[in-house]
Image 1 (cartoon, rainbow, N blue to C red):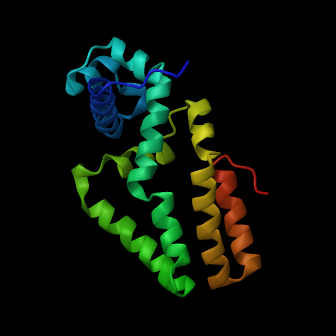
Image 2 (cartoon, rainbow, N blue to C red):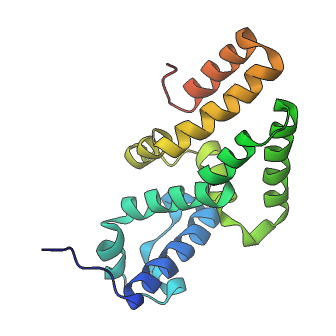
Amino acid sequence: TQPLRPTAGETETRERILAAAGEVFAEVGFRDATIREICTRAGANVAAVNYHFGSRDGLYQAVLVEAHRRIVSLDDLLGIAAAAMTPQDKLRALLTHLVELGLQGASSWGARVLARELLTPSGWQPGVADFKNSEPCHEFSWTVADWINALVGAGLSGLIAARTLLAAGLQPL
């Protein structure tokens, strides 16, 4: 038997909940966000969170993944990596993108969610660890590390990368 595909209404509800959760988590953080507030903003039933995401934790993990995607998709990063530019220009392109995103302010909750998680960790480690150890996150980290290596040399960039990975809770290879 084939799994049931979500209906258009179910997909729309899931997206509304995800967007509302992103806004709420960006505003108040994981600890202070409530499912009731998220569902009120989304115009959805509280039970819909469990239906679509399994739990509040599952919703937060989905928000982290969506926040990362909103900031820079793996396709965007690979596009910059494949471009015929110097490592300096590649980093400049990435940093310009991030600064422009930051200037969008309230319309971009993705950057605020990730910044809040980095500055004041939620303490909810399973989903954060899954996110940090995901293929897109690793691909992003190592691609940028390669650019830094080309700029400052292997010794210094290796130290920077190792310290950054350890600070993020990842193990250097």
